[in-house]
Amino acid sequence: MRKYVTIIIGIILVAASAYIAKDLSNRKKDKQPANEKVAPTVFIETVHNTSIPVQVIESGRLQAKNKIEIFAEVQGVMEVSKKDFKPGTKYGKGENIVSIRNADYAANLQAQKSNFQNLISSIMPDLRLDYPEAFKQWDEYLRNFDMNKPIGKLPEPINDKEKYFLTGNNIYTSYYNTKNMEIVLAKYHLKAPFSGILTDALVTPGTLVRPGQKLGEFIDPSVYELEVAVNKSVLSSLKIGEQVKVRDTENHSNQWNGKVVRINGKVDRTTQTVKIYIELKGTELKDGMYLEAVIDGKPIDSSMEIARSLLIDESKVYIVQDSSLQLVDVDPVFFNQKTVVVKGLSDGQQLISRIVAGAYSGMAVKIFKGEK
Image (cartoon, rainbow, N blue to C red; front, side):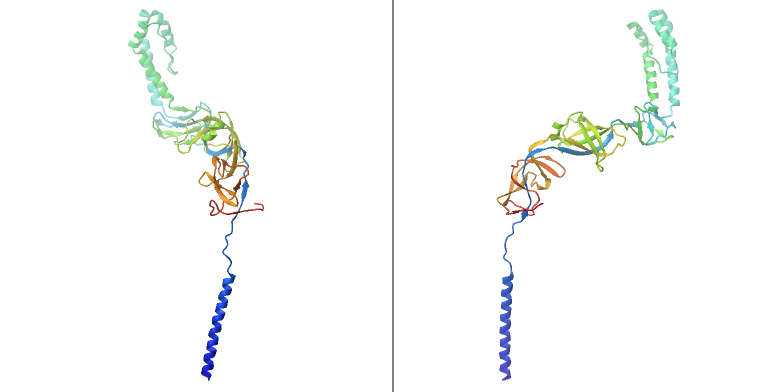
């Protein structure tokens, strides 16, 4: 009897377990939400075309307008001068910057002058007899001859006969040889062509200097030029003499007023830009500084400025039409660092103002009604 009771109880427990499992499964299915598609919410901006002022900001490196690299044209040992030949040393116009030992060459020049003087003296008797009308001016030239001064200009021959006589006696050859040596001697002393400052020094006194060797760099710190490359579309609004605002790239409060002094006539093939040169003056300016030029261009009519991130394939944007996204063509006419000025949108269109993840044409969306 107990055996049958046990079997009956087991059957009842199995049936109860199956019923409970089925009931729990049905409840889970009832709790699962329906798979409904939710339209994403988008932010829009109503299109209002207007005249957009264009402001070009381009950076470049500042350079001294008057800058020379100092090279040696003669050979010799560099001598000690009154001022140290070191970066930061200032020189006035005409002041000696570099002196190279020239005693040997100066002695050779004096010997050449003496030979030239003797050559003129040797033809004086013939001039007195054959060319008495020319004797007076040559006699005066010889009397004024000074070995310690540059030789003077030769008297002009009165006629062709006198000219041929002087040529045959090597007067002109000797004169130009002497003059050439005087020119070379002057190259042993390098003088400042303008008032400025030494920015680079590559030699020191006692160094053997050779022809063609670079000695340093000298600039005029009173006037500088900033070279910047601007898009060719801005050229129509630029002209020589136009005022341009220039500022420090790190601190925009540091500003200077410059003017356009030159515009290159060549367009860069790869970047489609043109280089312009802006002249600047200021005590705070230094050669090599990086500055920004803020250039005001002509306003662009019937256009709208939008974020560059909204552009699709550089020529399309999304608008909301009939509660769905539509891709429309636009004409980008001017690019800034973060924005772009476009044409082609119609007033009143609802332009997407923020990027929509996974956006595609025809995508159903809801417009955000609150504040951005």
